[in-house]
Image (cartoon, rainbow, N blue to C red; front, side):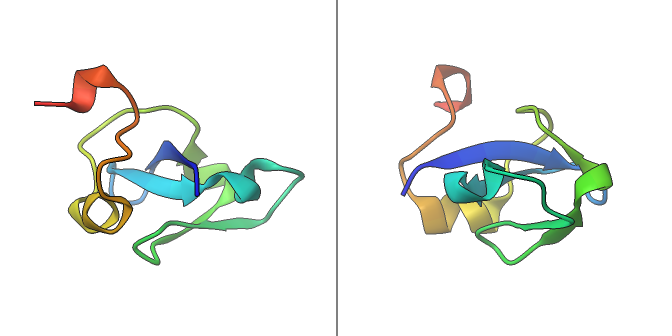
Length: 69
């Protein structure tokens, strides 16, 4: 499943959210790690450190080359 990596304004980490959550308006988004963020507290940008729990669950599907070491 494809993911988008968005920053939570709660913990300032970049979490993996399933792409099917990006269609339509939602009041909350749930990350792969089960971190829940209300719409007004999610920044739709790849910013901040990647969430390690999301990264482990998603595996090698990194957001782009700048995150690869």
